[in-house]
Image (cartoon, rainbow, N blue to C red; front, side, top):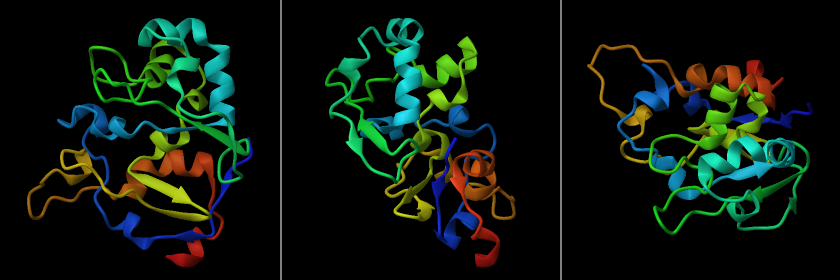
Length: 182
């Protein structure tokens, strides 16, 4: 898999609190980040289309109905292209969000149906970190109830955004310059 090239990294992702203590699933946010929908890179899109039999029953919709745009060519995405997901009018959440409960159908397909993790969009795998045109940085705005904004005790050490998302970052991004920027 070709990785997304990064040549600048905002040092704040090594200072700002990450998704500690159980991550998103232990948050009280009710999947607030899903209100934006997401960009699905070409590699992920191909996997989604290959596994419609697993995903469509989870979302009670066709895969094609989940997208708001045609394929857009852009080398800032794995596979060199992406599509934007639709946000459902009924509940204001990404079209791939599970209906009637917390979580994403694509995460569910990976975790419970043993599909490749690449089926989860890059932007969702690294949240609250994001990227644009060679720069890795903290997403903004981060919703108020996001786990990375939860209050902690004054002396409580919590891992940074980079630390909690490091495995995904290393898998998805070409970050050879990161060590030079520390």
